[in-house]
Each structure stands twice: as C-alpha cells, then as structure tokens.
Length: 306
Image 1 (cartoon, helix red, strand yellow):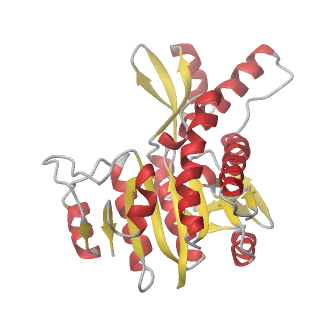
Image 2 (cartoon, one colour):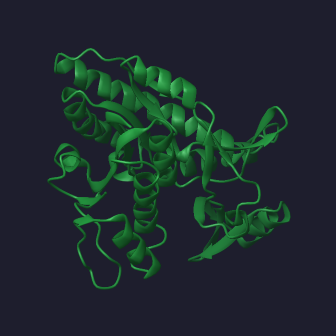
Image 3 (cartoon, helix red, strand yellow):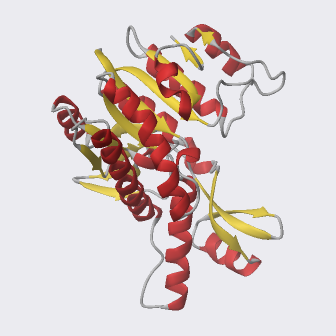
C-alpha cells in the first residue's frame, strides 16, 4: 500500500449541468483537492459525467438529423468527449488553485479506456437513462437498431447498460505520473467502456458506474484511501434513515444484503468502498461531502469503511 495515495471520486454536484455551472463548480472541487495536495497526498481523480455525456449524445444525435452526411456518435465516443472537456476545466481550476497557494504541481488528464466483460449481465438489464426525450416513432426506430428504450412521462428515453470495470488500460501511464509527483485526472465518467477484439479495443454502448471504476483504480495504484465526494455529509439508509458513521466491511456487507441502499445512488458507493477496502490491508474508504474532503480523509467526518 502506498501511504497517502488517494483516489478522489467527484460526484455530479462538483460540476452542475451547463458550461457556466461547471466552470463555477470546479473551483470548489479544486479547493478541496488543493487542501489534500498541501498535506502531501498523491492524488488521482475520477469524476461523474452523467449530465455531460447525455448532453453530448443529444447534441451529436440532433446534428446527425440536421445533416445526414453525419452519423450518430457512439456512446464510447461521447464518453471520450466528456472526459476531455471535463478534464480541461478541472485541471485548469486545480492548477490555478495550487499556484495561488504557492504550489507547483503538474496536473494531467488521461483519456482512459476501461475493459468490460461482453457477457456482463448488465447488458441484458440496462439501467442508465441518457439523451433527449423521444417520440414513439423515434423510440421504435431505436429499438429496431437493437437499443433499449424506456417510457418516461409523455415520451421515451434511451437506456443503456452499466457493466462493471474489469481492467484499466492506461494504468501504467497513470501510475508513472503519480510516481513523478503529478496530480492525475483519469477514468472520468467511469472510463470509456471497451471490449477486446484481438489487438483492437471496440467501444461498448454503455456507461460504467464511476464509483466502481474509482475503486478499481484505487486498488490498481495501491492507494491507501478512496474518497467518494457527494452532496451528503454521510450515507443514510434507505428505509429507516439511519446515519452511518464508522462501519466495518462486515457491517457494510450486512447492510447491502439487507437492501438498505438505493440501487442507483447509494449502493454503488458502499459496494465500491467495500471492494477497495477488502482488496488490501490498511485501506480506508470515506464517503462525505465535497466541502468536507480534508476532514473526511482525517476520519473526522463522513461514512468511513475500514
């Protein structure tokens, strides 16, 4: 285990849903990250891309409708675009915050591909809703292509799979940058989901849950901490609103087995924490608010699994 090496997973509250909101919100994220950099932590950052990848997919789809020379962009390409432009805003905000504090530390964004299993059961049970609202005719056309749709309100939305991460292809580059003292932004949006086809990597029509990829990344770089930053100070159970503080792996597993967490929001965070902590010795996972990052890693605040 590399002491004081941390993976920070930023939730969607760190970005907002529009370009101006994102540029404003990343400054808050940069402050929280700089607090840890000042304490000599080695930092790798993952982030949500939920609203952004949907916006890109919608824009590219509309563009293809306006000009038939162009095709709809595949989800893997939309994921790559979201990694690039979120990384651009985030790395510049972090760089500025560090320099304002008198810290010179290079910040790099790695466009990251993550291998998924083509036989992952998630491909038969998609859960992630993306893109614009469609008419019945448009939804039927999507289904004819082999895509999944779901009715939402008066219209229909496309729904895609969320498979688990198996491997991170750029892990050697990420590790090398961390070892060189750089701050690394990687595996944004859970990474670009790809499948191996011989020597080629083919993009998958999916969105990987970022918390699971954050746990995979933290394990592969042998981090001491996984810090999942959300809009809530601590995790609260689904039915009885029980606030969770310090819990063991065994307690977390019992709560998971007892169906105590929302499957689309809280459950991935707890499962990611359990996966990371149980994969090595001396590890700690913390789930807390963005503003509490430093207090969380010092175990003064948040839900802590160890």
